[in-house]
Amino acid sequence: MEETFKPLKSDDRLKHYPLTPFRLIRGLVCLLVYISTAFMFVVYFAPVAAVLMRLFSIHYCRKATSFLFALWLALWPFLFEKINGTKVVFSGDLVPPKERVLIISNHRTEVDWMYLWNLALRKGCLGYIKYILKSSLMKLPVFGWGFHILEFISVERKWEVDEPAMRQMLSTFKDSRDPLWLSNWWDLRFSIFGSEQKCQRSQKFASEVGLPVLANVLLPKTRGFLVCLEVLQNSLDAVYDRIPAKDIPASDAEAATWLIDRFQLKDQLLLDFKAQGHFPNEGNGQELSTLKCLVNFTVVLKNASLPPICYDALKTMVL
Image (cartoon, rainbow, N blue to C red; front, side, top):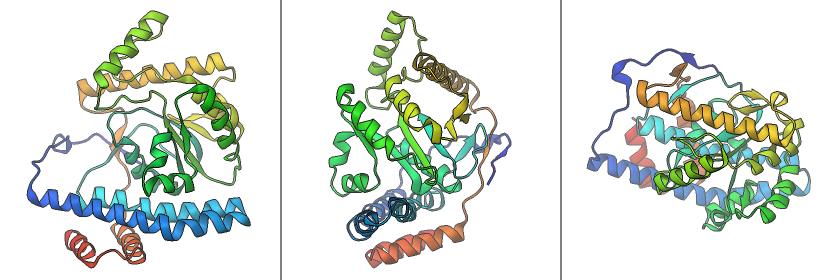
C-alpha cells in the first residue's frame, strides 16, 4: 500500500457544511453503532481472547485480541469516510506496513487519536495500536475495561509513580513477533480546550530555560519518551516521523534534544500549512475498499446483535 503524492486541486480544500437534520441523525446513528458494538465486543468476545487464551500463550492471546480490536476499530474509518463522506489526506513519508514503531504525536483536536486509525487500517496495524493515556480514562464504563484488555498504559502524570509502571508494561511489549504502534502525545494537550493558556505557559517556560519557543505545539515531555525508547529500542523498527530507531541518539540528553528538535519541525510545518494550505508531499492515500468495509461492517453488526433499526438506517446511507 503506497500513497500517491500529488497536489490537491483547489476544489479539494477544506469545506465546512451546515449541520442539517439529516447529518445530525446520521451522526447519532453512527455514534449508537459504535457504542453498542463496543459494549458487545468488550463484554462478550474480548474476555475469551484476553483471559482464557492468555493462560496458554501471550503471543496468540494478543493476536486474537488484536484481530477482534481491529474488526471493531475498522468501523470508524468506514463510518468516517464512507458514511460521513469525509476525505482523509495523507502527507509526508511513505509508511511501510506492519512495522513496530513508537509514534510521536501532537494534539490538535480532542479526537485526533482516532484519525490514526484511518492510516493504521491501510497499513494492517489497526489492531496493534496501543496508547499511553491518563489513568482516569481507564475507569470509564465499558471503554475502560476495553483499555485494560488492550493493554493500554495508564499514567498518573506523577513521574515517581509513572516511571516504574511504564517500565513494567513496556517490558511486556518487547516480543518482535508482535506488531506494535505505540502512540502518545508527548506535548500533552494542545487541544481545543484551554489551548491558548497552555501554549502561553509552554512558551513562558521555554523562554526561561532557553528552549525553542513554539507557536503551534507544546514543548514535549521528554522523560516518558526516553523510557519508551530505552525499553523498546532494540525491538523497534522506527520512530514515526519515519526515523529508523537505530538513528536516534543513545544518550538521554541527546535523545531529549532530538525530540525537541522534532517538535520544532512540527511547529514549522504547521506554520507553513497555515500560510500555504497544505503539507509537503501531500496526496491521497489508497482508497478504502468499499466491499471490504461492508463485509467487516456486516460481520461486526451481526455478531454484536445490533438493533435492526440501526442496521437498516446505516444500510440505507451506504446504498
